[in-house]
Image 1 (tube, rainbow, N blue to C red):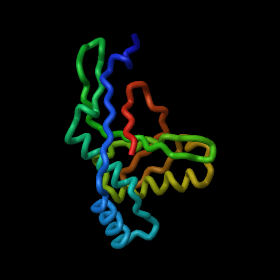
Image 2 (image 1 turned 180 degrees about the vertical axis):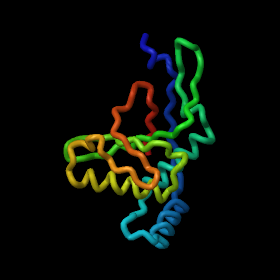
Image 3 (image 1 turned 60 degrees about the vertical axis):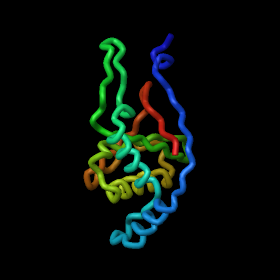
Amino acid sequence: MSLAAKVPHFHYVDEIKCNALVELKTAFQKNNPYPDVKHTFLPILVKSLSMALTKYPSLNSCFKEDLMEVIFKGSHNIGVAMATPNGLVVPNIKNVQSLSILQLARGTGILEKLAGEKKSSFDGNLPQMDGLKLILMVPPKGTRVVEV
């Protein structure tokens, strides 16, 4: 039996009203002093996920079978799947817990631009700006996937 089969899995679906989220995004865009930054839902959702990981740290953990212990991760490294003309890529945003929504908006804007330029890969030369570090990753086994 593989280790993945031993790990508890769960699936949760809920429907929520997002009126406040829509208002927040609209307010960010309306009061935006940076013309090069477009506020979308993605940075808000990524930051919200990071805040949820702070509140529920067991969701940001892994189980080491040989030690029989749970390892809690301190960093919130969140991958964002992006469709490109050459397939799906998953850039990983490092240390989301220490980034602002504005920093995330700038970073996801860079990623969208690169994807729009029909880059087949991000070749490890992603720009680093304003504290945002991005890497291209292949999700390791045991990585949690949150679908929004």
